[in-house]
Image (tube, rainbow, N blue to C red; front, side, top):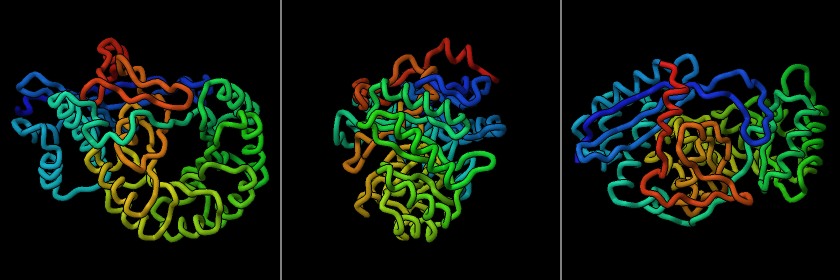
Length: 363
């Protein structure tokens, strides 16, 4: 079997909020690059990548340029493909190169699963056949306090057992305002729902410690990305100071920064972003590093693929359910009582919806 061709598309999906209809910018768009890799045996694998924003055309060009180097290669050897592309890019790590590599690697694993007749999660280890998932995207910092409270009430009726909100509020804010918003959301959520809080790197270390201590009364499941992602000593100070678990890793590129983060004991829970880390092959390496440090792993975005990865590893904890990509696929895993059942179809278990690709195509 050999790689015969590749095909890419740019799509722009609505920037809506599918869980409870709490979109901050309902007229906005989210651009993605889709990838299809065809083999001479008739098997086709799919991948997707994003975070390009205005650089999306450049990201598509990177996917096509790297993908062209693999024409004629064995699609069942994703590690060999990664080495080939790394060498061609003169050892590049991060940025458009890593985002492009992720889509290609994803598609290769899809092909491998289809060729072997196995769903990805089983092929990679199959530690469990259901995984916990949490609601994400419905409690964004751009909502008013009243809107956030209403969204929390609606989430309580959705069946989720875990949900995430954002703090580090826009405009003039204060520790008092931050803590009050968390209290309001916590009261509005059903008592059985665990609450996570995402800061998106917006607090200084001292702020994270001071506000984090005041939030401890709420029994948060975790505090996420509390300060700059590469300030590993600073993150370690926060993790040491707080009883609440500290989560981080989504902003790291490739696998090497995770070694530094883990060695510094910067986090209690490791979050891995599939497209920033370099794809499934690299994701699994970071998960193994986290296991060696006795730490659980959680995912960032793309639940349609991350459901396989969290289920495959022994230290997988929960899947972020932010269904931005749902419209692109014919069928996706859906939350049921706070869990996702694993797909049984081979590979990723996903197929692009052809009508959706046409409707949202932006190139």
